[in-house]
Image 1 (cartoon, protein in one colour):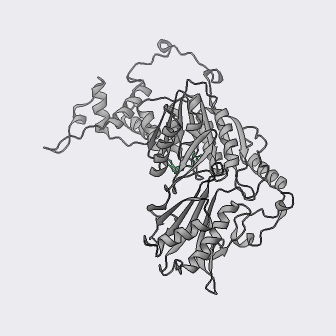
Image 2 (cartoon, rainbow, N blue to C red):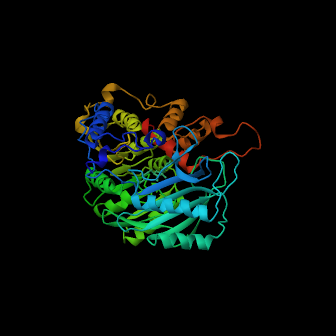
Image 3 (cartoon, rainbow, N blue to C red):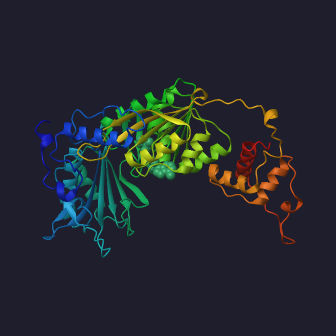
Length: 476
Ligand code: SAH
């Protein structure tokens, strides 16, 4: 490793994948620690970053764009920074070696099978991208050929030739992406060899991974990351845990043994499908997975007045949303464990929690991406106990507040419902719910202005939100 860590990649400038090629690993860790302290040090002490013993060839996922060079040779690699020129890559020091060997074989096969590479400008050609994932613990390998059409000429011979060269490949998937898009995968996938997914092992569980499902790219550090997240969650077996942005369920499933129940929520349908099967195959019964937007899911839980003891959240680099965080707080978790791959958005989101009665207790950076500027962080937030808040005893008689004075206006109720639940409610709906709760309302609020028109009835979700507002303003 000693000699490798200072190896300078010949294409690093063009490719831009490893901005710290040639920088000693110790130095990289120091820089990451400093940047984390600068960004997050104001919240609490930043623990020393956890680095890798061997920071080379750690990525279990290799993605290449295919193209031709000026001499018409097939090349594959990544886009040159800020351009759509492809940099040919043969030996990247971040990516799994075996997957890179397979990539080179695919280049040769593409030539002998006379496959046309896709031209973004004209939309002509077949082979767009290749994605290879290797499960480090099981050795299973998935090759995804991303084509502009579902027809691969000589498919059976191509599969045979690829498997003859690399018998360790356990599945090959054909994915069709026929759109003018920067997204790698298209909507349609079909296995042309093997089951169409691979299985890997992490933290004592087995996980099935489909082509479009998110899976952490550095499995060695992922175990460390999840161990820290579980430790921060401080589970005793009694807790209801939300695993938000759960992917294929890795964090939730590996902590379910220490919780009463785990509810995972994830947007990607394939990932949720994987998560459900993963729960079954690992014999874990106290989990359920919901497909949908995490913010909307949390909002629904908040409106239904559900609670959770621990919220684990692992959003994409763009961070979480106000809807999510506001609702998460309403579930009154005593702990929130935030796993983040974007320190800037993490700082923004922590600010929100801190303003809303949560305290940052611990910050632990983990180096998941050596030779790049990226850094992963796990943060523990705790709900401020009443002891931390100044208590004031109020005698209502002394204050002489009558029920009339504690009433909120329609506008105040609207503002509250919008702020707390992100829902817009009309005066009509508020009046309907007030009436249901036995509060006097003016006659005209209950009827539509236009004759012969049916009065719309307040939907359940909005009713719950309005009731919460009425409670907040001590009107019920
Ligand atoms: N916790 C998982 C996945 C983290 S990556 C793991 O460690 O493997 C972030 C995940 O959030 C991805 O799976 C992505 O599909 C999902 N995601 C992105 N936007 C989302 C949203 N609005 N609601 C729910 N999930 C979302």
